[in-house]
Image 1 (cartoon, rainbow, N blue to C red):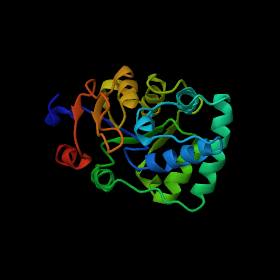
Image 2 (image 1 turned 120 degrees about the vertical axis):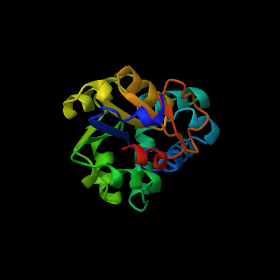
Image 3 (image 1 turned 90 degrees about the horizontal axis):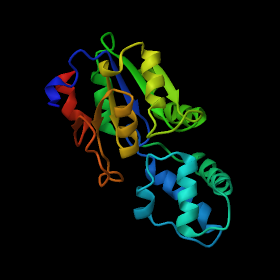
Length: 219
């Protein structure tokens, strides 16, 4: 699809959160790194990058298998959560500046603007509070209690809340699993890879850009 046709007849724009609007992948990696260190293991970032976009359960299970840890995925999830909460007390969520410019450029009366994340609502609210991004969104969907990406359920929920048809929706995603989820939901999908996800397969996206800045002239 040509970029010029991307927003034709579109009534809703939906964003992924982690990696698309805020660069939290390194923070999440550090929390897993600290967690597995409790069992004398090291988690390589190159391997962690292959997990970006997966659910927490899938991420933890794959780490357990990869490092041959003698524990359940829930044990790792709990250890990682303790580390993450300690880090978040001091950390900041770095906003993708191009994404912020794009959000500010959206003509709000014309589009419903939604947010979808696989994370818990507590995490989403923490990020939105720290970044002051809340005012840009008409709706927020947490996929914590839904079948996770690459299943289409999180984006189907967002499309339903926006009260538009799937093809009248543009989704911005940074991960392969997220792109797959949005495509399966029937939306038009823009892949915006970041440093951590650049090597993933985005062949199913309708448009791929290096920066959301490239889309602003077509809103």
